[in-house]
Structures are given as structure tokens and as C-alpha cells.
Length: 226
Image (cartoon, rainbow, N blue to C red; front, side, top):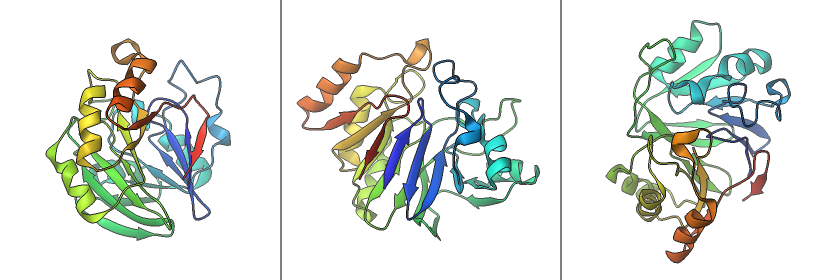
């Protein structure tokens, strides 16, 4: 499983020969809009955690170009289905066996609305059980006890957690979240994109390290393999 960070909460995941794109927000991200061309991104599936613009902005354009299936909650998928895009609707607690592995839609504590203010359903996260590795994509969320349910069913190899604070968990809560999901290998997201969520990278890494955990903060375009 190869995971590439395109900044903010946008990730590309390659697993079993399929390309997954998570929360594509590039053309509106001042820090990377000139670095990446969305017309060059590969996608067989687009996973959307919730409807906010900083997670969905480029989903329609990429899906129409690639023919990717958008996977999200019922309200979000209905929105894109009306635009002629192939979708797979899910809701909290639901599992589906895709060609890349099992996908579960799990709870997140946040809000969810489209840029025009229309309802985007309830926010969520994803647990991906691949052929050899399992990951948790938390999406935008506060710390929640529901996270403790995840390791009761799935042993994680990586947890992708928001750490920017203000709109989501900050570093301290993300450390607790890593305890809840019983995963000490963390990939940070949702930080530095704009002023409210700027963080001190070295301090964040130190705080995780002091708790015996590994926090990875990838540069835009940088990848890791599990």
C-alpha cells in the first residue's frame, strides 16, 4: 500500500492495483495549486469524508475525467449522482467489499455542508482493510470514544489523523486518539493550510515521540509505503 500526501487532507492511496483519492482539495489550496495538476491525478475511487469545500472541491472534475466512483455518505453521493457521476453510498457502521479491500464508514464528530450551504449528511471516516495492511482515515473530527470501537474489529497499521486544532483535534487530542485506535504510527493531516491550523512541526513530533509514537508529517507529494 502506497500513500501520497497532496497537502491538507488530500491523499492518494495505491492498493491492489487500484488508485484511491481521498478528499481532493488542490485547486483551491494556495500552497499547492501550482504544484499539482488535477488532470494528472489517477483515481478509480474517490473517498469523501464530508461535504466541506476543503475536502470536495476537485471531486467532481476528477471523477468526470477519470470515471472514478465517489464513495461517501448517502447525501453526498446523491449530490454527485445527480451530476452523472457513478457513486457508492454508505452510512455509519456499514462495510462493503470493494476490489481494493474492505471499506468501513465510521463515525466522526464535525459538521458537513456543501459550499452553497446545502446539507451534506453526517461526517465520517474510513477504515480500509487492504490485502496486507489496514489504515484508518479519521477525516475532520474531534476526539471521540467511538474510536475505541475500531481496534475491536481491525488491527491498524496506520492512522491518518487531523492535528491542526481549532476545527478538529489538535496534537494532544490526536495522541489520545492514537491510544483509542491502538495505533502508534500516525500520519498527520489538516494542518498549515491556513492561519487557524498552523502548527509547530517539531513540537508536534516531539509530543508524539514522548508518548512512544511516530508522527509523520509528509511534504506535499511525498509518499510512504506500508
